[in-house]
Length: 385
Length: 115
Image (cartoon, rainbow over all chains, first blue to last red; front, side):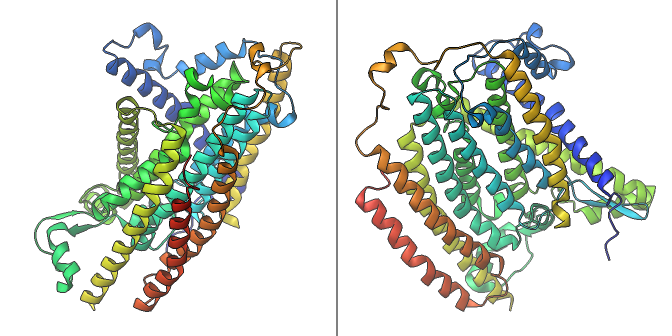
C-alpha cells in the first residue's frame, strides 16, 4: 500500500499552490523570457547586452517590465466588462493547467510520501485541453474591447485556429493513449520509466513475440511513436498560437490582432499568457514523449535502491527527487529551445495555411497513426500470448 | 472530487486578486474619452475585409469541430480500454470512425475546409 501523502490538509495544499505559482511566475516565465532574448540575439548575430539583463542574469527583467508598464496609460477605447477583464482572464487557464502537471514522481519521506503535483486529476490531459479551449473564448472576448474590425477578425481567426489545433491534438494523442492506457500525466511519465529492445521490435511486430535482445532503449514516447511526437508538437503549437502559427500577432499585418485595443500592462498580460502557453506545451511534450522526470536507463526503483544501499532510504528518496526534478527541468529547457529554433527558422503560416495543416494533414495523419498503432499493439499482444 | 481541491485553491489565489487588481489598475490608468484606437480612415470601411464565404467558413469549422470533438472523446474511451478489448473492439471502433472519415472527406471535397 502506498504511503499517505504528507500534506493532505487545505493549508498544506494552499501552501503547495502558492509555491507552484511562485515557481511558475518567478522562475519559469522569467527563464523563458531570458531564453527568448538570448536566442533572438544569437540568431540576429548580436550579443545580448549585459545592460538589458537587470539582476540575476536577466531573470528580473519581467518584473522590471511590469513595473514600467504599471506607469503607462491605457487608451480609453476599451468598453464592456468582458473586454476590460480579458487581459486579467487570459493568463488564468494556462496557470491552472500547471496544477495537473507533475514535476516529479512520488517519493517516500519518513512515514508519508511527497508528490510534486498539485492536483493529480484522473482526466489529466483532457483537463489541459478544456483550459486551452477557455483561452480561445477569452481571445474572442478581447475583441469586444472596442478594437474594431481588425481585432474582431484576428480574434475569430485565432479562436478558429485554436479549436482546429485542439481537435488535431486530440486525434494526434490517441495513439499514445493506446500505449499508456491512462489520461493521468503522472502515469504516462511513470510508464516510460523502463527500457525496451528497439532492434527486437520489428520481429515482435511480425509475430515473433517480445524478446529482449540487443541494446535496450528508454521506453519514451518519442522512440515508441515518433510520428505522434511530430503531430502532437505541431498541433499543440497550433492550438497555443506559437510560431509559426502566430499570424494574429503579426503587428505589420493585423496591428496586433485581437490585442489591438490594449497597451501597457494589458498587452503585457497577453504576452505573459503566450509564454505560459509555451511552457504548458513544452511540459506536455516532455511528459508524454520524453519520459517526464525519468532518467534514461535508470528507473526510479533502481536509483533509490542503489543510493539507499549507501545512504539510507530516506536520503535516497530526497536525492532521487532532486535528480528527477533536474531531469524534468533539463528536458523542459530543451523543448523550449526547440520551439525557439522553430520560431526563428520557419516562416509564419497564414490563417489558411494553419487551418489546412490542422484539418488536411494532421488529422488524417493522426488517424493513420492510430490505425497503425492499434494494429501493432494487437500484434504484440498476440505474440506475447 | 478531492483531487480538484488544489485546482480550486489555485483558482482562488489567481482569479480573485488578479481580476480585482486589474479592475483597479485599469480604472486608475485609463485615459479619458475617446473611442476606438482605430485609424479614422477605417470608418469608410466598417465591415471586415474578407474573401467571399469567410463568414460561413467560421460556422462550418465550428460545426465540424463540435461533431468531431464529440466523436474523438468516444474514441478516447475506447483507447483507454484497449488493453481489455479483443480484436472485436478494434473492428467496432473502425466501424465507428469510418462514417466520420467519410464526413471529413465530404467536407474536404466540398471545399468547406478551404479558407
